[in-house]
Image (cartoon, rainbow, N blue to C red; front, side, top):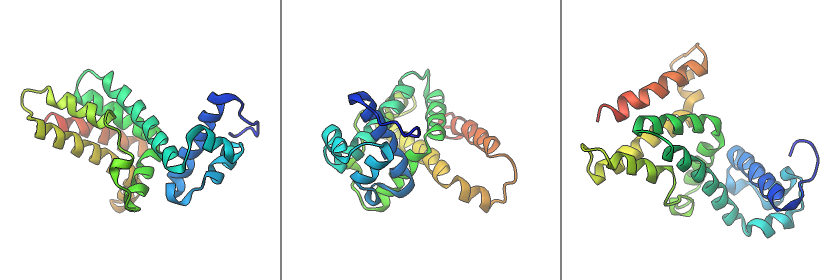
Length: 190
């Protein structure tokens, strides 16, 4: 919390802890962040983190579940696969810590089953692709996975790839092009 005011009540404490965890996990990776680090950033006693979330593992899972719920909601409100991917890309741009958290977890050899939720955006996106006449179940799974990998890869490596191609324009313009390509290349061409 930025104001120095301590959060009070269950909802304020949970919100402060989730925000602090998201920021710290995105910056340093969950393995490099302690419950005390989260509590300090959230401006609460570390015992409250344990009280509301349990272990650090449970806190990481809650952060990931929180993201999954937001993304699943966006995908559910989409009219088609292209719209869903645009929503996902926009939400990933708005929450850059998520891609970094996933990268940290995977690079630290965490089993994805520890933090992937069954009904997240990936599952809902897969379901959208499955409804298409030209997609088998396996094709829908691969298409959903590859489009998410493309968008996550772009957002995690964006500074590197733009520097590597000597891009001198505005990052927002590059993102707008990528957002358009998601529908054109990965959805409509299948």
